[in-house]
Image 1 (cartoon, rainbow, N blue to C red):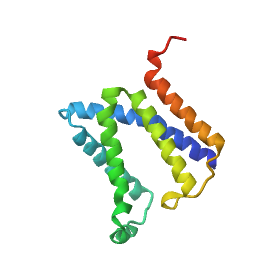
Image 2: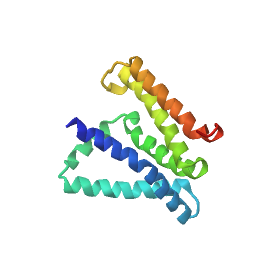
Image 3: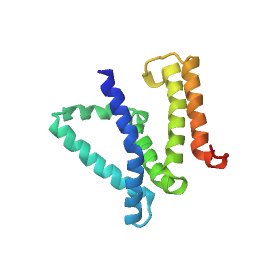
Length: 154
């Protein structure tokens, strides 16, 4: 069953550059606004999730509990908007590969902190030498993706 989750995570990673490129086309179509392009993306995404919830028989009554949520618990939407807006803004300026490599490096570094300290109730996971070595390799990969064209050809 773990394999399914690994494959799903890989699929998500594969579509993030596609999402940035598609949102960039929407940005150009609507006059250049990255904010409005992100709004369109979230609108379509919200409609898609509502249809998926209906088709899968989700219990909508659970949404009533949102009145008990703290403001920080609703922050995921803000963070998602930041990601979609940011990637729509940045991708055409620095390139998709540069943007995604930097995003991945940030994700790996932050994720190690979440694992090590169990932030926001996430399960604790050891951050040993091999995992730190993997993070360092990601950082080296980011440097090569972003500055490798300045090195001698191999």
